[in-house]
Length: 261
Image (cartoon, rainbow, N blue to C red; front, side):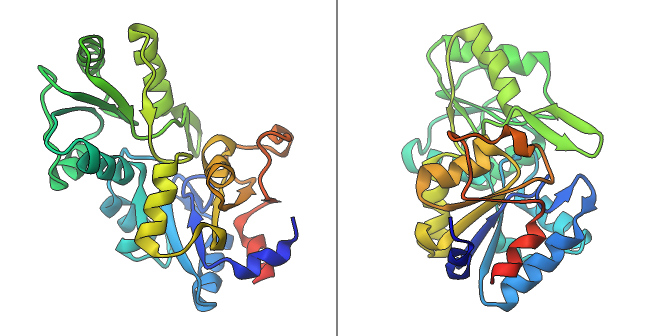
């Protein structure tokens, strides 16, 4: 694809961990890219599938690491899931396998959470406070007919020292026990693309998603008509790319994109 089309992009949807920083280490090229993008009149949204923290936590982190960020620019897979629940399951009881941050975010949005003794829906996420009791309750509820949703499908979360199990890995355990597959939200699913278009007012053909994962970031673009840009600063290596998962563009780092503004 001709890189000249990047001149027409009005909204850049940026993955965070592995794309603009790794753990607590910011990529200087990412800070510069965001500055140039905004100076040229483009919009930037920071979107992470990692729903273990709420947007306020990510906002504080971005500022601490030196990024030019506004609170309204930060969206997580937890936000997409909560919006779906409030649209299609308003008032239904939810058992959440998630962190206290995500619990607080869901409660702020008016989602009725239970202690696991009953629920209409089980929502599983990247839960760094996971316990066997939570898993047992989730599996029992799903076997008894509760719907099974998950904020995002990522199997591993990148850190400065390697990878740790993420939401998809937790869901795989629940699926192995119950035989039930979850409905996923976040990247790469259409609910995310639709929410971003509504919230920021930019059509798909003028939106680019930038990230380090083929099956979430790049698939979001491929599946929903957004320009997809892979950066090689996180999970994916160049040799992982094939005809079925290829992005529109591949760059060693996000800083290379601004050459085409």
